[in-house]
Amino acid sequence: MISQSLDPAIISALHALNRRGLALPALCLVASHRPLAFVASQLLYGVAPVAALLGQPACNAWAALLSDPAGVAQLEQCLTTATLSITATPTLSTTTTPTLDAHVLE
Image (cartoon, rainbow, N blue to C red; front, top):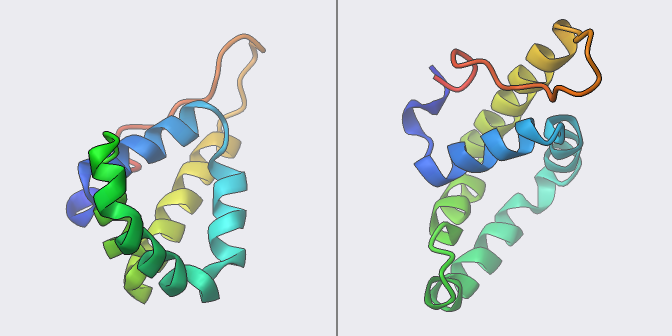
């Protein structure tokens, strides 16, 4: 449902954040810096050619997402859903890391 319009590189980054248990800190960062999202997107558009030469082609996808207020809201919604799926299912073992359910980003 959420990931239909998200770039695969962004989905991959969101899965990586969730696997590492960083969905909540990422949500706090995105929510608190929402007014600067457009400025960040313009900076990403500026560094995208250099980043592509260095093997990081996802800058354009992130810039496109952050340049649109609806994209930032979509990112917040996705991170909120991931955070809720982690906190709603407590684990008994401390050796396992929380994983993102398949339905969260689909």
